[in-house]
Image (tube, rainbow, N blue to C red; front, top):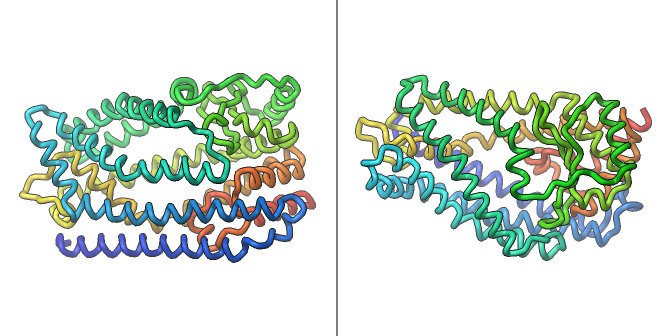
Length: 421
């Protein structure tokens, strides 16, 4: 393949993925607006018109911001590749070439700074404008900045050693460097799964043991029925950042812990909380978590193998605005360039991932229905749809491409079918 041809292929895939994404978002916005004035028949007794319209307006506002953000991201990608931005960053970092690995770290640091400059305004708008307008944001500026500092420190503490290992492997392990990197990534990911619940998550939120004795007894009975053991039941102070509610379990082996947002505890009845947890346990019992981890490792294996193939191809670099004079650029440039453009080519896999995720949600719902009262899960979900301002009328095509959960009407209908089965 020539560099000119690869440039054309890259631009074509970028144009198509961006264009299809914009088209789907516009469809989604129009569909929600067209159905804004009436609550779907199956929800008229449980969700008011005011709540339905709030969900519609909230979803439209987020999608409009997302449209602008996707356009800026596409321009940033072009600027970093064909526009010479990454080349400039690598040249600045190259001034420190006498330090063996410092240029590579600087490339990632400078790219992170550029990315933050572009993305932070959107994050601020999402948090302090949209979330605040619709009554969800509880984040203060002080907490936002503190989270940012903690995130930067954590990223540096974890990312720098990991990058140094990757740089060394890419330089020393020959043509199979990618296989060694994959093995390191596998070990790193499993380690993070183990340490995240006890060491990383508490840096950002407070986790308190569940104090409601009757609720705790009910949940422990459910866990016993399901054959699930955990290191504890915890309530997370999610309300200090947002009024959205959720529940989840994290970790694996002896580090598994079940976490409830405090907002969820406040809004749902004990039987509804039990039903929501039964759904989450359904993911565990149906081995969705294991399947997800294995699939991620398999995908990472293929991706790294692909990078191992293109890393010494002149057309790959020249086609994306990086000179190639017979010797490959710094390994950091190779890494950055590859993972910058990868989403352009993998966008078309999004519907498959969403389909698998929705299938898992149906299976988890079925499991919850076998362990708790179906109506408790239905009423809990309806409350969550209402309180989280989740639209009841998504565009079907947009939902098929992007949504990891089934649309509300389809999911509730599925649960009712289990109720009558």
